[in-house]
Image 1 (cartoon, one colour):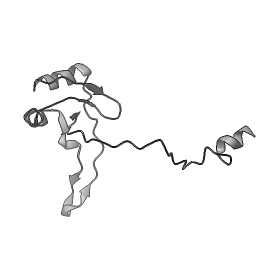
Image 2: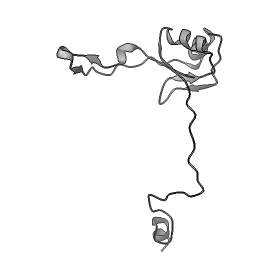
Image 3: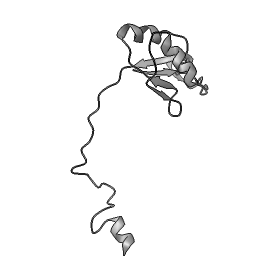
Image 4: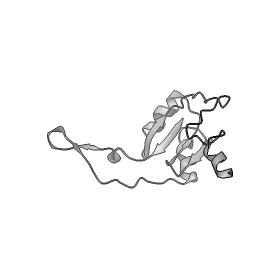
Length: 111
């Protein structure tokens, strides 16, 4: 599970006549690793990985009940289940940038 901090107020709101209202971006609270660990401990879990750059949150293993409880906790923006991803094979790489080969960029730089 991935747990991110924030608040529903950070989502876009409805303006007059049902039109979307663009609000200035609110700064999300940044939780320290200790605060993330405390949040996980509320449901008897322990963070496996902490994140603080692209998002503020942590990864952990949770039961469905733990996930529901943590989702309702103050400061928790979302709890999302990990989705398995299939890795692309590197056996037949596609050189879409045309970097390799006799007419590629790397060869041209060596000339």
